Length: 623
View 1 (tube, helix red, strand yellow):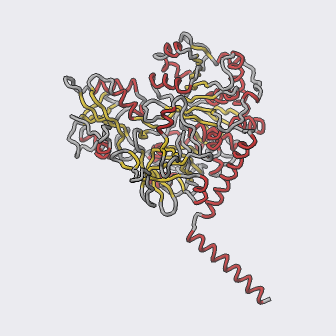
View 2 (cartoon, rainbow, N blue to C red; view 1 turned 90 degrees about the vertical axis):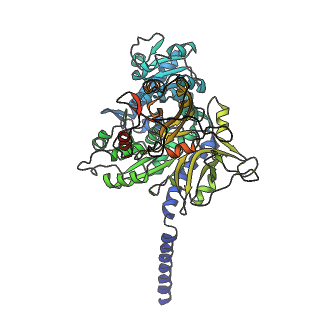
View 3 (tube, rainbow, N blue to C red; view 1 turned 60 degrees about the vertical axis):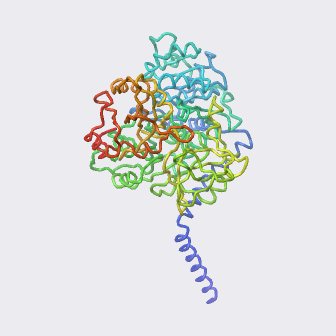
C-alpha cells in the first residue's frame, strides 16, 4: 500500500513538474496544439475534396445553410434583415434572369461594380450558380484603370450598382465599342445601351437552377477575380480559386467563431478581407453579418450594441479612427469579443484595449494573390502570427537579406539569397509547391512572373515574392515591418507608384516624377508623396495639379505632398532612387526644396507652411 502511494505521489509530482516546465519553456504549447488541430481538420476536408473531385464550394455551403437554417438572419443592412432564404431566392432570380437571356454560360466571367449592399452578394452568388466567375471591381478606380480590368479578366458583361452608374458615363462608349454589356441595378435607365436588372428580377422566378451548373470538380478552378495594385501601375486581376476562397472562409472558425456570432462588416466587399473572410466566414459558420455601406466611426459602437455584434473586421486605420473618437460613457458596454483583420499598430492595439476592453484581436497576414498566411491566434500585441515547427513542415517560407538602396534581395557570390538571423528584418519569400500554389494574375503571364523569385537557395527553386519586410523573434512570433518596391499602403488600399507617376506625368508643367510613400505620425501605412521636376518654361500650378489628381486618381492614391526638385537621384541601373526621399519624408527642418500640401478645403496644392506641418505631425489635422 505504501509503495503504491509512493508511486502515485511520484507520478503526480512528475506530471506537475512537466506542466511547470512546459509553461516555463513552452508557454504557447497547448494554444498552438489546439489551433493547429483545428487548422489540420479543415485542411483534411480540403484534401478529401482534392482526392474525390467532389468540391463543396463556399456557394455550396451557403445553399446547405439556406436549407438548414432558412429563417435565420444572414445579412442585416440599414436596419433591414435578410434571411438565408431571402438571399438564396434572390440570387436564384439573378441566375434565372441571365440564364433565360442566354447572355452567359458556365466558365464565363462577369464583372461586378457595386458598393456594399445585399444585392452585391445576391449577384455574386447568382452568377456563381450559373458556373460563372465574378470579377470584383474596386469602386474607386477611374476610367483608364477600369477599362484595363476588362482586358485582364475577359469579362463581357458588367453589373453596376445604381449609385455607381454615373461614374461610368465617360467610358460607356468605350465599353459598348468593346461589346461589353452593361446591366444597372435599376428599373429604368436614361443611358443609351444600358440594360436594367431590377425590373427583370421582379418578374423572375426564384426557383434554383440545376446544381450541376455550379458544380466544381477541382479546387484549382477560378471562382473570382479580385483586383490588386502592383508594380505595373494598373490593377492586376488576382485569380481566386475555390481552394483560396475555402481557406479564407475558415478564418473565423479557426479563431473560434460560432454560429451564434454576429459579424460586423464595414470594409468594402470588393476586397478579399470582406468578401472571402467576412461573407465566406459568415456562411461557413451559419452566422449573421451586419453589412455597412461605409464605415462610420461615430456609428460603430452604436451599431455593435444595437445588433449585439460579437465579431468585427478591421484594418489598422479603422481601429485608430475609433480610438480618436471622443470618449464616452459605457465604452466597454458591448458584446464584441473578437476582431479579425490586419495592420494594427502596437500603440493603437493597447489604446483600443484600454478604451474598449480586452477584445481578442486576431491579426491575419496574407495578400489576395499570395500563397502564405499567418494568423496571430495567441494575441501577442504587434505580431501578425506565430510560426511553429509544425507550421514550417507544411509551409516553406524564408526571410532573406534585402538591399534597400538597390531595392532587391542580396545574393552571395554563388548567386543565392541569404537568410537573415533570428530577430533581423528580411524579405518574406514563400516557396511555391503543391501545398502552397500560386495561381497568378489573369491575362498577364508577365506580371505573374514578376512575383516569382527563382534560384533562391538552389538552382531551380521558385518562391513567391511577397514584397514585405518581416522579422521573426526568438519565440517564433512574426511581425510586419515595411513594404518594398513600387507599392505602399494608405487608407487600407495598395497604391501603385507607377500608376500615380503615369497620371502625374500627363500634367503639362511636370517633366519628371518620382512617387513614394512617407510615414505620417499617428497614421497607418504611408501617405503618397511625389518628387517633381518642373518643365523648363513652366511654373508649378497647385490648382491645376489638384484638379488633375481629383479627376484621375482615387482618393487614397492622390499624393498628399509634393516636393519640387532640380534633379532626380538615380541608382546605378538608372532607376529612380526612392530610399533617401522616403527617409527624409516631408520634414520642413531638413528639406530645403519647396514642399506643397494637398489642401482639400482650398482645392489646391498649397505651400507646406510651418503651421500646417505642425498640425500634421501633432495629429491635429485630418488627412
